Length: 353
Image 1 (tube, rainbow, N blue to C red):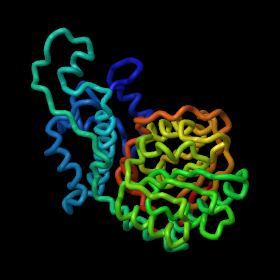
Image 2 (image 1 turned 135 degrees about the horizontal axis):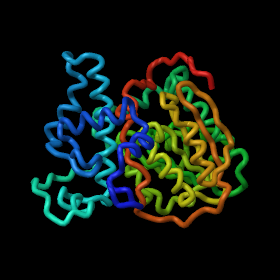
Image 3 (image 1 turned 180 degrees about the vertical axis):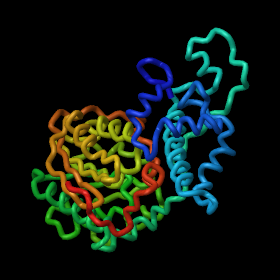
């Protein structure tokens, strides 16, 4: 993946500043070079012997012979590799070692044989059970159950203050739709809402459809689709309400900023965005709040719900024209980005808000 302005691979300093990952980014880069997963002269675009080494990195964390220190190193390396491979597959960087070599301005051919490019992947971890994840939403005393109550309260507040008339909403990586469906059940504006909930997991979509039908919410449409691309929202935007709950903890810092920057394309005038993010170090909620302000959103609420925070922001600038085919983010998964964070475990709040 080349820096779009300078057309060169990003330096270690830039990676260290921009990537929010467990462990030491520089040390992970050194280890990934040592096992030949990335070239010595390229941090991002080309990987070698990926099938063998990826299998090792993915499964070694479960090896009983690993020490705790080795286990954490492998988790950090896997998280960095996941990000780098996803970024390198965005279609903007060189596809072969020869093309990358030429991008450096070389005049002779690279002696080594080109290495195959890694295809785009949703999450290299591939082990997260997102259906099981949603079970905790049914427990009001769980961390996810408490967060759900806060999100639903923010949705109801938006409905209470919305002008009379239709209300359009979209849900990004909407799961089983508990937030919107639960908030609308019994609300006096429920008939005004037309919503599209976009989710990749077919089982979760089926649960959301059943939930909407049971609640009598005919205006809620739950679809199977790739929520990371703007195409998924064609015909459902501009939206008055955009739900980004459970998204920012599963994508990189770069993609958080990219997603927020593109929200005006999906927004109606004065649209409300409701989002969540865990507080696991490094706590990115200050960065997210600043990114919303930079993109033209005022903050309406910022609520602590350990181990999460829930934010609500309103568009203060003019909406932008919708553009199809824009990729907002790569879904990596919090199990890769923050392997020590377990949202479904009981949480003791030791952090001062």
